[in-house]
Image 1 (cartoon, rainbow, N blue to C red):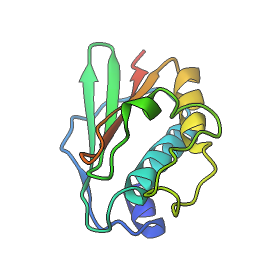
Image 2: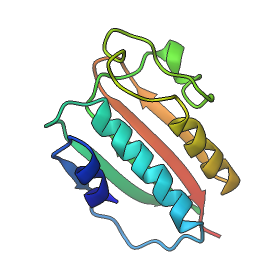
Image 3: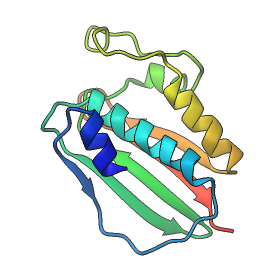
Length: 137
């Protein structure tokens, strides 16, 4: 998925943090869709040479996957609406970035149907960390 994202985006730097092998029972294509969407968003809203970091950790009976970027960040007034259908952050910086506002909504639906959780931590000017969990059993 990293190679695919590098191929379809302008990003040059996606780093996979070392991790232990974790087996998850899930719809592989749907989870790949979530990862590709989060990675491509990170690349789209960050500069070409801005690093994007992927991490994967086992936490109790769940796996947590996080995509961290050093892009423009998201203000608190937009965070709770990000996973709504057709919602896009409106700002001078985002007006030239294409999209329909359905990618994060689809990601949230896929994760919810896998009995997981998806969220974002962000601050304007300091990038974002999009994370999701999936149950291990």
